[in-house]
Image (cartoon, rainbow, N blue to C red; front, side, top):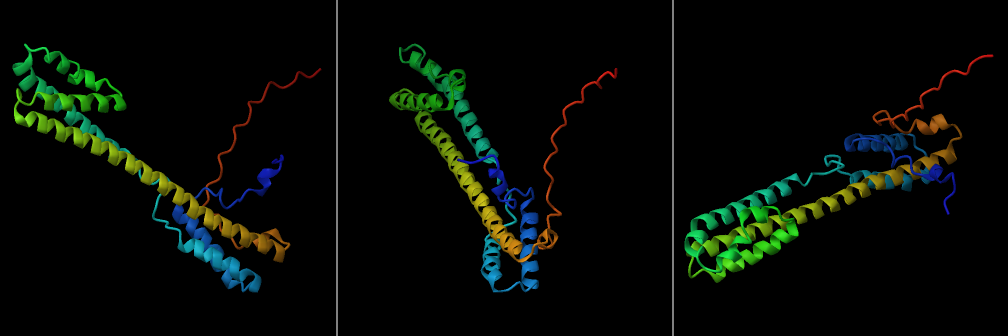
Length: 232
């Protein structure tokens, strides 16, 4: 069980608040300082590990990567085009051809306004049923209605699949970003530990690192001071 002092063992290099270019630069500073100091054989594998971690770190990426807005916009566009098609097909073909037949009531259940109110899973289910209805009535409707419905519904499904794939890719990329930062943090922590074995002076250990680009944590707000006690 972790005790009250468990945070003392956290890796401070993992907590540095730095943009990726600055984070890589500070790691390179430590590597360069270690190499220039000729610290001895005990440091060779530690500096090699740090060098490998730096080589696997791409400072041109962003910590949050790219948002999913592009995929969402494409889905919204496909959805809007599908609903517009449904509305036009109803006005131009279904109503003129089928309004006096019982099947017209089935089409009314899938009007544009009703589809627009549905959440995504229900929208796909209802849209699929509407496409099947177009196909079932293709003898009474122009050929392009069933074909157009199928094409636009397929585009809607494809846009949704692309959005999901994009979200999954971004999630994976964020994990990779966390991993490459952690690799540098782990290497630097081990380097620092060996420095502390070599030097008793904390200032000397600190001189191998450059944290000048790190953002300081936000200061906690102090509680408002109460009224001064009344002196007797």
